[in-house]
Image: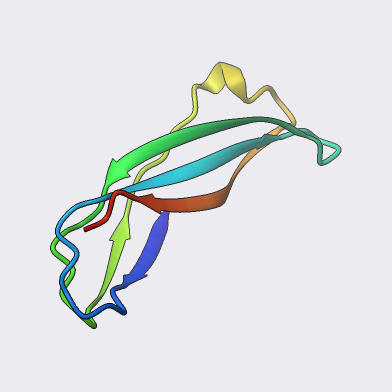
Amino acid sequence: MTVGLTNSGGSPVTSGEITFGIHIIGALGVDWDTRETTRKLPVPIGAGEKKEKTWTVCVDAWRVPLGMRVETREVKLSGWK
């Protein structure tokens, strides 16, 4: 999962986390489950700076039976300073 981050504030971001909401979708489009994966932000991100970071997000194979798929539908930032 690649995410572009832009610090639009006036001071650098020096800490924080990013959480991905990984949805397990059935063959008919039904959302069966959501798993969350949390990683550290690529800090520091200076004021006005843009950064792009790629993370690997995984779900155990047994959670995704044949015919189902995985989608990352939510991305949340928390604890950033």
